[in-house]
Length: 130
Image (cartoon, rainbow, N blue to C red; front, side):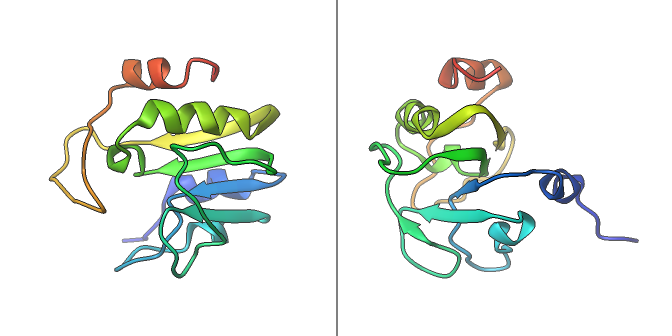
């Protein structure tokens, strides 16, 4: 059996500057920055894989990105709508976004596990993304 993730192929096609949200490497996780040719890692905690320590429930100033990677992060954010608003502010015109959230998954606190979000919920949280 080949260990292949289609999201890795997707990441290789991304051009421009990428922001990887929730980039801290812990446990068996990979450094998602390495999937992209030009990536910056952001996490609210310092550690391996983190270039910017920042809580995205607060605005991030001085940065703009062509692509945003938010994989398995939103369930850990107390106010995901605040994070989404601040993500919108750092997206260049025509930027792309990859959002992945668990819907049916065990509770996995890091630092907390607050939400399960549907596709319709993502449309509410990210009203400017289409």
